[in-house]
Image: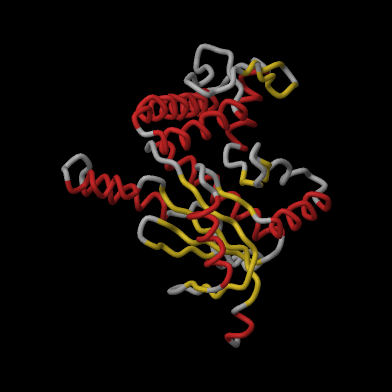
Length: 268
C-alpha cells in the first residue's frame, strides 16, 4: 500500500490525564509510588476493544507519555470502536480517581504499529489542550455529521445518545452512556438484582463516591475545582439515584436534580 493511500482520512482521538504534572511532582515528593504511576499509565495505554486485525475498523493505539492517540477507519464500525474505547478509558481511570480530557476529530492521518502523525492528530491535540477545558472528549462537527448519518441508518439504535451537547455548546462523547443505562434500568425500575448486577451497581456506587471525594478535595484549587464540578454535574444528570446505594453528588455550584421514572431529571 502506498504512503499516499495510508495518509488518508481516519477518526482520531487524542486523550490525556488531567493533572499529570501534579502526579509527577507527587512522585518526586514520595506522595505517589513508581508502581502506582506505572499502573496508571498502563491503564491509559490499555485497550479493551476488538483486535486491530478486524479490517472494518483498523483500530490502532499509540502511547505518548501520559496520553494516548487512537484512530480507526472512517465508517460506522470504526466510530463505534473509538467511542467504546473512550468510554472504557474514562471509567477505568475514574476508578483510580483521575479524569481524562481529549478531542475526537476526522482528518488525514498516518498511523501504523510504530508512529502516528498528521493533520488529524494536530487538531485533536489542539482541541484537548486549548478548547475542551473540562474532563470531556470533544467531538468536532465533521464527526457529529457522520454520527448523525450512522444513527439515521442504524435500525437497532445502538448508537443513540453516544454523542451529546454541552451547555456551553460543544459536542462531546457520552462516556457515561452505559453507566446511565444500567443505573436507570436497575434503580428506577426497581429490578431484583442478581449477584452480577449487584456487583456492577457497587462499582457505580464506588465511582460516584470517588467523584464526591475528588470534588471535596478540589476546593483549594479553583481551576481544578471547576473541572471536577463539571464532571460531577455531568454525572448527576446522567446517572439515576434514589436507593440506598448512592445519591446525588453534593457541593457548591451543582444543580439539585430529581429523577422521575421514565423521565430525565428535573433541575431545581
